Image (cartoon, rainbow, N blue to C red; front, side, top):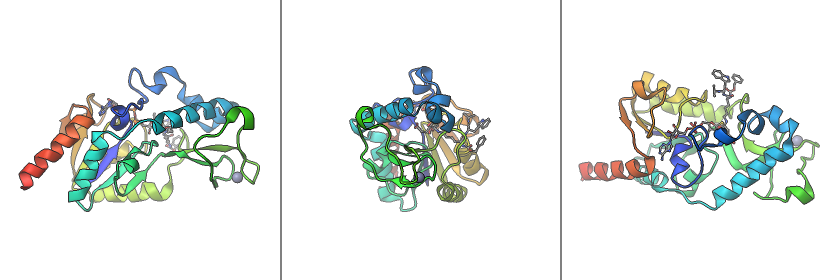
Length: 232
Ligand code: BJW
Ligand code: ZN
């Protein structure tokens, strides 16, 4: 079983999505805030945005959808999470085997050599400026921006597990950003039953075996209750 998730699963925790009408990309330019070129142009601005988001995320909690996955995993040993989210909420909800396709917002790495930098989640940008790696490169958030490759081993493993899945949930993602958006198609092509959970339709909806057009924080706990009832 694969739980493939996007920003929508964290919406009910109070974390904004990207492409909804009140999402980040309705106010901010992704090519500045989520690309290496944008970061090189104005690293302070980009860091400000990520520090703001870190603070926001620390102040919220995982929601019933995240906890619903924990409950599924208590019954199914081979159930993994492949998330595009960087917010760490799957881990905080106690989900096991969480593959982070787009990195983690609380990680920091060097812009030049890629080395992981051990830094507190919040630093004072105004007084200390942007921290540097020992190679002299600037520190940057440990996330995957547009035009960058996804972590290779994670991506390979997730594609492997997706091809072997019997059941694949695609939850809270607009299914627009590749290569992650390929996963539900890959699952379908390799014989999985694919269930989409999203209040809105996506380019994948027509291919799904089942589309549940409801908020994931409502539907996942409900699905689990019904499953427990069926297994009892
Ligand atoms: C609910 C809900 C509720 C609301 N319950 N649901 C042209 C064609 C094809 C590909 C490309 C192209 N040009 C460039 C590309 C490649 C590009 C890409 O795919 N672009 C497309 C946008 C066209 N991809 C990349 O660049 C990737 N790298 C790559 O491909 O490398 C090789 C390459 C390089 C150069 C050229 C070509 C190939 C890297 C992608 C990195 C994405 N990074 C971000 C930012 C991460 C850091 C950060 O957080 O700041 O990742 S962008 C942003 O989008 C973030 C997300 O993980 C990602 C996906 O978004 P997600 O999760 O789906 O969120 P939304 O907001 O889109 O959707 C939310 C959904 O939730 C909605 O559907 C709601 O309805 C739903 N929802 N409430 C359930 N309660
Ligand atoms: Zn470095």
